[in-house]
Image (tube, rainbow, N blue to C red):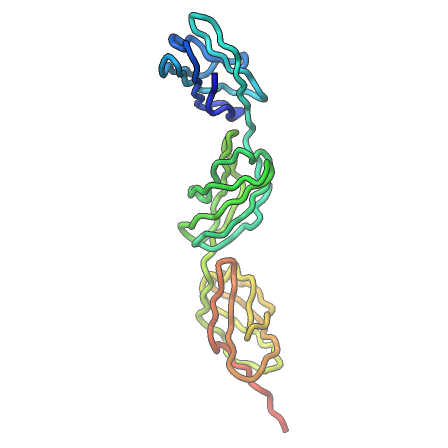
Length: 248
């Protein structure tokens, strides 16, 4: 007498289909000692029932006027617990893969990012990988995991737009470096690096539209300035000009 699925949440509520023979006039379905919360007669060979709450492994039995069947195992699964995301931010377009760690993940069937679901690859009971779907807008969203044991929330993932540089002030400075430059634009609050002619510059984020950076030493002439965040990079060609000092 097979049942499908043969596992479900400890909180109950799993719809189980029981297939066998002589199931007509079923009067009861029990999960261990507990009766199912509802029973529906589908046909003489099939009954559906909703599991009650429970723990561990229990035997499912069907009772008809002819008696009670042999038990078939049903496994209660606890709700998943998520401890961390391998990456907590990424491009608004999605497509990047993140690893989620926790416990009770072996039966995961879906991971939701702000209500948009993706199908995970289960690595083990404590790890799964999932390709992040595209987001609706830049900003944080809740992440939930659904398993046979239920759905668990509690983690946050931030969708990030590609940065855009609008202007630099001042736009020139000495080849020795050390010029404090204010960079304005959009999506700058998740900046990971700022470079002048490919050379990393120390920087600090003011807000989503403003960065402050200090130029590294450079060679006289106009150089490219690039800002990078988890979604990508924006490069302004020749945006800053290094000026050689006077010589006598």
